[in-house]
Length: 313
Image (cartoon, rainbow, N blue to C red; front, side, top):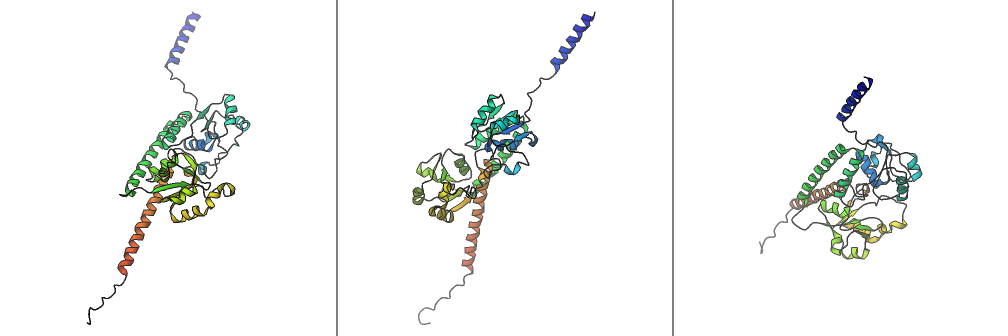
């Protein structure tokens, strides 16, 4: 009889177990990012209490989200230190600390490579990949919808700013003389903001060193600069910023300064740079309209010279 009761109880337990939903994979709650590009995705998606540490460059002037850290610590990029923190997930974009990454993976810790983004589209895909790894899909959907709305507004503003003629030719420069041609996220942002890349005329694509000679022969309509207010101590590596032609161009051409953190690397946050460039274009258009109105008003206010009598009258 006891045997029959035990079998019946086992059958009931099996039925109950079969009716329960399958347990989902545990959501990581001890997360580390290895580089400043990956930091941005953690700061945008993860709950602060789930972030063990951010990269050594998380507070750098070119790091997006440095003002969002709210006391979150940083690691030094050393594998031993990271292993001692016992993370359950490490996120990276392949940008640095690769030796540490190899050791971390050898200990069986899960890692996610979101890839280095060279476009806004790739950045949005990386956002989805990170969200899936963190179990934060709902948060990602909210962010993606917000970015879509912002881009829609930006494109409408671009349409209003674009005139009947050709678009302005813009050139991106940094203090070290690095520039960006077709195929870079800088180029994509410029085009989204209604600016053509001046390097197209020279057939330059990708990241390259800027030629002072080419700049002198064919100056752009607009200069877009970044990093000129950062890393002031590295004078030897940043000689381009002190070249007389560079200084002349920065003063004579239309000059748009984009904070390095808006596009220190590619990612979902490139929409910030698109909006900033369009805002600068709009400000300049308003100033130009105001200047034209002032000149017209001054002309209207000038006293007209009395006409001289004709002949001997």
